[in-house]
Image 1: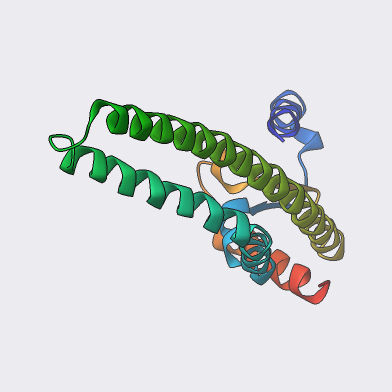
Image 2: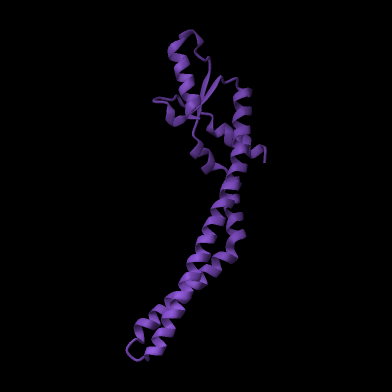
Length: 165
């Protein structure tokens, strides 16, 4: 996207007669925040991983309980009990770290997959809005120092993605 903006700006500076007739802008963050599909995607991912999240939280609770027991009962426990409790804590902590890391990686991977699907829909909507309204160039809103609100097609893109659902 940055390369496209740089090329467009270089063309405009080098050849003023080649300046595009109609330029539009959009705010991709605002678009993604407004899409009902994005919220549905997040809810679907939460449902998909809810059992694993619950399992990791259960381990976390067990860890806290054992750590509290270790602190609270340290003075009355025998050395064998202390050693056994330490081993349980280490084992449980290792399990927690392993399952927590795997869960985070899997959730991130699935979120990226779903975001890519949604981004493809957004790109299709951007293209259709740009073609329908005969824009020559569409830039990211942050790339421009000033933008007339009439040039912002973000709302139209959100509407187009909604219709294409």
